[in-house]
Length: 372
Image (cartoon, rainbow, N blue to C red; front, top):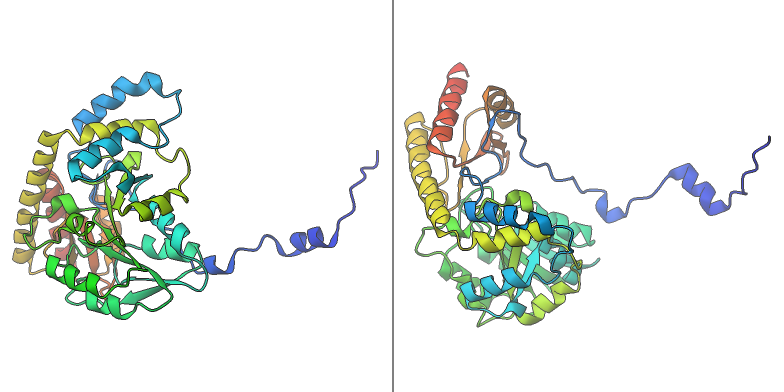
């Protein structure tokens, strides 16, 4: 039997000849590479809580499992109500995202298009550039000062085509932070037409007294958006839930780019319960503070350069290729994050773990460096 094919028009012929064509603004995008995990290895690569998840969150999930046949609450009412009470804001000043990185897409989708730009620092979270580039915008990078966001340099890059400034505080991967005074001086130089995004994913770990009180600035400026997450301190990284706090108009704009059921029910239940787990939070902060002191002392004894961190990780230089170190340490039982930034091919980032995990990392690092 002879098979008869429909005629091929010119458009179809071109498709078969050249294949699908990627949008030109995406050709330079490199997909995000997450921290690796080897079976049986201690993972100190992704700044997760080494104590695991909030017990209250886990228990709330167990109780909820027989209700997963229902669609989730599209507006995340329960978590918004609790966050609003905690921060003294109204619910229409909150937006919930599938991780705070999804909110970066909401921001770019709302304000970035071809011909416009955003501003951030060098050596910071790569998803700011990804979101901007995805919507055909151009990212501008300000140099750091003492491995910290240099806010005057960011302000100097703003022009009539700038729509967003992304600031990570504390910064990832350096763990450094800018002060309240620096932030207050900065916002005076930023036009009301530019959204200031302050990514505070690690804010709960901060103990420094001069850290900015960004929440209080929301009363003074409508163009500030604060991002926070349940992935770090509360140990809910696997459920992907973060949130933004900002002016009502900004939040309304972002809701126009949000999908209706972006947060699953289990994540909402767990996050709502985690906010009440004060004992877990206290224990997690104690472990982090004690762990940083121990690691600082060991790095000093080994003569290693490192940055004091306001977060739950430390950036340091180890005097050998970071990728080689990563591979060797992973094979021996610990994963870290190789970070060859700012002309430092020997830079790594390590999450502050439990006492046992920290000692294992230090012992393996000493062994590795002795052989080098």
